[in-house]
Image 1 (tube, one colour):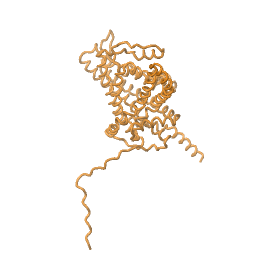
Image 2 (image 1 turned 30 degrees about the vertical axis):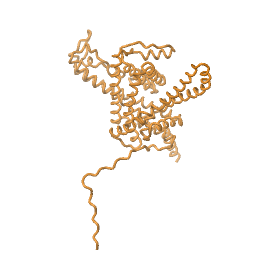
Image 3 (image 1 turned 135 degrees about the vertical axis):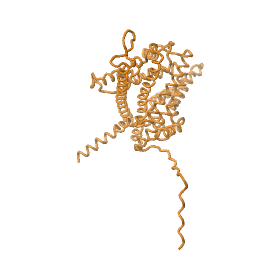
Image 4 (image 1 turned 180 degrees about the vertical axis):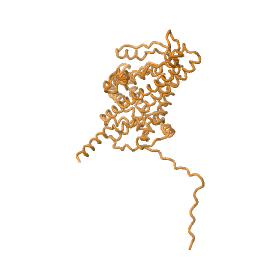
Length: 449
C-alpha cells in the first residue's frame, strides 16, 4: 500500500513537472511534413535575403564582414559606432552572426559536458560553449538591434516578408503539432497549410505585431510630450504635468518588452490550438507565463536542455554520415593514394579538392574555385547543393523542434492556469463524406393485408 502511494506521488510530481510531455517534442519534431515546411521556409528565406543582398550591394550598400562584432564592441564600451562600407551583404553578415549565436546558445545550455571530457562529443560541445546562454541571447538581440538601427529600410522589407513566410510555415507546423499532441492524429501537409492560410494575417501575422504596435504608439505619445518642451513657457507647463504619464508609458513599454520575450514563442501555438484571433492569442501568451512564472521557467529550461541535447546528437550524427560518405567516395577517387592531385607542392584526393570539410562545426567549406577546371566546377556545384541540402535539413529539424516545443509548453501552461485538459484542441468541422453512385432505393411500403 505504501509503495503504491509513493509511486503515485512520484508519478504526480513527474506529471506536474511536464517532463514526459516535453520529451514528446522529439517525436513531434521529426514528422516529415513539419521538417519539410521548415526546410522550405528556410530555403525561401535565404533566397529572399540573397536577392536583397544582391540589390543592396549593387547599390553600394555593402557592409564589412565583422560589422556586427564592431557594433557589439562599441555598445559594450559605450562608444559611437560609424559603420564602414564593405563588400558583404547585410543579410549574409546578419545570418552568420545569428547562426553563431544560436550554436553558442545551444552548446552552453547543455550542462555536465565535462563528464565526457576527452571525447569527440565533449570537444564538439565545448567548442560551442564559449559563452553562457544569457550572453548568447544578448548576442542575438544585438544582431537584430544592429539591423534595426543601421539598416532600417532593409529590416522593414526583409522583416515583413519573412514574417509572412514564417507565419505560414510556422503556423502550419504548430497546427499539425497541436492536433498530434492532443489527439494523436497527424494532419497532412495540405491540412496544416490550409489552416495557417485561413488564419494568416488575422492570427499568425498580427499576433507578434500587436505588442510592437502598442510599443510604437506609447513611444510616439511620449515623444510628443518631449516635443512639448520646445514650446516656450506654455510647453514647460504642459510637459511637466504630463511627464508622470511618460513614466507610466515607460513602465508599460517595459512590460510589453518582457511579455514579448517571455510569451512571444506562444503566440502561434495559441492561434493553432484555440483557433482564436491575434488579440486572444496575445492575451493568452502574456497571461499564462505571468500567472505561473516558475512553471514557465521550468518548462522553458526543460525544453531548451532537451533541444540542446537533440541538436548536438543530430549534428554529430550528420557529421558521421557525411564523413563516411566523404571517406568512402574519396577513397574511390584516389584508391591507395593513386591518381592524387598535385596542389601547392602537395598531393590531394580529388574529392578533398571538390569538397573541403572541417568538422562538425564546418560540414562544408568552399573549395578554391580557381584551381578547378570546368568539369570539376560542375561536380563541385552539385556536391555543394547536396551537402547544403543536408545542412538545411538539420537546421529545419531545429526549427521544427522549436515550434513543436513551444506548442507543448503552451498546452502545459494552459493546463496549469485554466485547468484545461491536454487533449482539448479546437477542431474544424469535417465535411460529410460524399457518397458515390446512386442513392440507396427507398424501402417499399408493406402491402395491405
